[in-house]
Amino acid sequence: MFSGLTARITGALLLVAIVTLAVTTAVLLPRLDSQIRSQELLALADNARAQRQPLAQITPAETRIPGSRAVRSIAHSLHTADGADVAIFGPSGQLLAATDPDGRGLEPSLAVRKALASGKSQHSSVDSNGEAQVVIALHGGGGRVAVELSKPLTFVNRATAIIRSSLLTAAAISLIVALLFGLWIARRMVQRLKALRDTADRAGVIGLQAELVSDDSHDEVGDLTRSMVAMQNRLRAQTSAQRDFVATASHELRTPLASLTVILEMLSEDLNAGELAKARSHAAGAAEQADRLSSLTSDLLDLSQLDAGRKLRTELVPIDEIVRSVVAEFAQGTASRGEVVASATEQPVWAIADPGAVAQVLRVLIENALTHGASAESVEVVSETAGGRAVISVTDQGPGVASADARRIFERFSRGESAQPTHGFGLGLAIASELAAQMNGELLLEPRSGGATFKLRLPTVTVDGADDQ
Image (cartoon, rainbow, N blue to C red):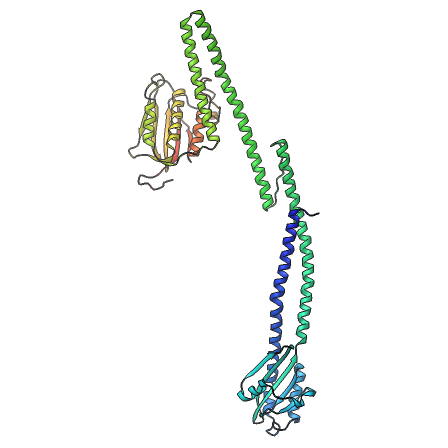
């Protein structure tokens, strides 16, 4: 019992074979038949012209007297050469000789009369009975004679029949081969597709743990299998990342929530006991934990939006103006952590980016520098165009980042080994890095002997607006 795909593939191959045979027969046989008939007419005409010299040597008397030996010899020679019936007519249209025993009373045809009249016309035709007829006008015995040759072309029909029979035999063999080959291809393809379907069904039942067997074939089914294997690997990675994200986020949320719960319980006890000084201290601690929860919630929301494929704007952004605006936000309230200083080149710096995302990345970098840098030193923010890119550099004078942490700090929920547990949740740099990547840029940590320098590099344009990426 054939499956639908097997039947369709086999039917398509059979249809191709049948159409090929039909087209070949329709095109080849008529042309072949016509070519054979044309060649036979040309051969008859050439044989008649070959008797030009013998005819020229006959006497005028022989052109007037039917049945002369010389004329009969010429007719017999033509008949022997190609097996055609030959009739030779004199200048007045009288029959001089004929190889057909019944041709003694043969009257000249219209073609013969035209040939005798024109002296240069050749009349060739194949009548409805499949007989080739050629009339050639030649000079003989001081006058003009017409040589008429007639030959049945039954052999052409026999040759065409043989060729048609051979084609039908070859077609039958081709159809059988096409059928067997189509069945082999179809069954092989169906088996591969069934294996792929069964694996997909297993994946639907037991999940992504179902293993897809890679297919090394260089065809569409192989490409489909490899695409499904790649998709399964990506889904596994995404599922694993989501599971880790939820687990880590739950852990990170549990800590400030537990601290907040304890502080609120202590605050309640202090208020009941009338110890207002302790109550104020605990209230400040509760507010600090609430701020941490608010910051973590905001970071988690940003990450969820990035994972959901949030589309950023793409427009021409004045980088130096964004730097001045963000630095101004940190101008107040940073005396205990250091001063933030902005500097820029004389030429304006432009980038193709999302202004909100650029500002968010810059806030993360400045906050990170203020948190981990030396409290008495300033944080320098520089905007410039370098290497065909718009660059924002944030430099602090802190202890710097260990080489072992250079890459890990850009991962989610990862902090450097020297970072304190209260210094954030390890999401800021991860968010900044992903925002930079979505703007076709990159966030880099530049190695330094003292302190740390983070650089945000974005696509830029020249001053006159021409692309310089």
